[in-house]
Amino acid sequence: MKQELLFPYLETSYRRPYPKAVNVASVPQRSPFRYPGGKTWFVPTFREWISRMPLTPRLLVEPFAGGGIISLTALFENLVQKAIMVERDEEIAAVWQSVVNGDAEWLADRILEFRLTKENVLDEINKDHDDIKHIAFQTILKNRTLHGGILAEGSSFLKYGENGKGIRSRWYPETLATRFRNLDFVASRINFIYGDGLQVLRDYAANNDTVFFIDPPYTAGGKRAGSRLYKYYDLDHEYLFKVCESLKGDFVMTYDMADEVKNLARKHGFEMKPIAMKNTHHAEMTELVIGRDLSWMLDAPVIREKRAIYKTKKRSQK
Image 1 (cartoon, rainbow, N blue to C red):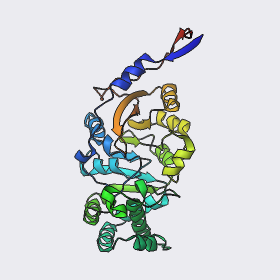
Image 2: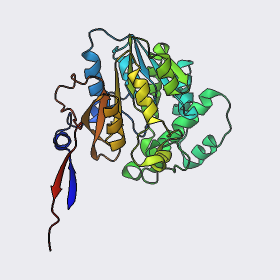
Image 3: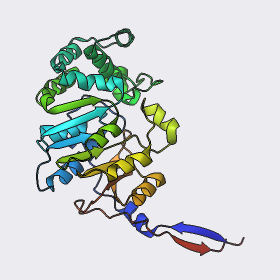
Image 4: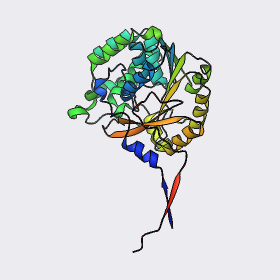
């Protein structure tokens, strides 16, 4: 006899993801990064979440900032008053530290004057700099010339890129310079913290006027897959969910559609809803949005998995 585990509600959810996958070209590009796992596709959903709040939140905390598109969108569009961006990766942190320290204009000028060749890139990224703004420039240079924008050890240069342009295919000096100069308009409203996102969540857990956008390193593929994308990929997901229970302000989390994640959401009493997205290869996928109350996602079916239904089937006889 063969037992088949069925989740009828979940199967329905997979067929009707919310909403249709976003065309990221329609979203203003505020971040200078090409970031693996970036959340440009989530921006319209984030706007919807904030717009349904009775009052404009005073503060947004993004404990795993990465490319920072959510915090930047929130600030440029005045969806929140201030943002706390947290990042543990020292290279990515150097970029955000440079922005809040007033060096965005210097980075813009450095990008415009740099002559991009593979030899020049190798010469620049192999220099041993101590000051943050030079490390920031090295980071942007690597992010824009390495495959997939991946900064983790072992990442290689783009070989072909768009239309066979190789490392030039993602290097847009004028566009990048403009993005950095624009960041000066919101830099004073950013509190950047180079450190542990979980600790910052705990520090602001009691604040009622604070909201949290939480996009942790995903579980899919295990540690081996995570190590290919990020330097700091290992995270205690169980503890993260426990911390989220203690938050007084509202929060949303984005996660991969993994059994481990769904089990944690059920255990801590959170709602889950599927959402369509496209990865860097333009393949449409389904991810999870998790929160206490996702009723603001009006068109999205709630994933319900409280009770697994087992159906017994006889094995077919040949």
